Length: 135
Figure 1 (cartoon, rainbow, N blue to C red):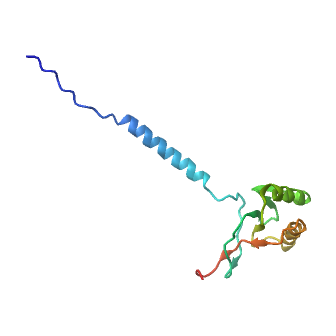
Figure 2: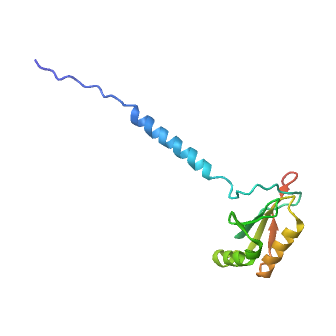
Figure 3: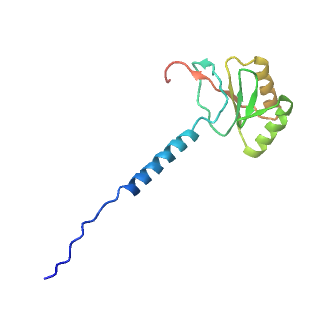
């Protein structure tokens, strides 16, 4: 009498390893792109009364060398007002938020504040490293 042989299913590990490897590569690359938005190395000053920013803010960076960055792109001081007005028209921002290095020159920061206020924006905040615990 003929009996058909019963086949035992085989599980191939190669596709599973390929998928896990692809997930690992994707996780590594996506973690690298989740870095902070600024490519400017700044050392924030410290303050006990720092608060979180709310609303849609125009974000600017001032480096230790006095370079001003808008949307992670350096902006020439002579073109600052033009670039700021373009950003305000495009984004509908309600306030400006400045990340200035603790060693940046005061004159550069005041010039930046003046340009922002000349465009009609009164709310200007500064990023600080908060000292002490939560209040």
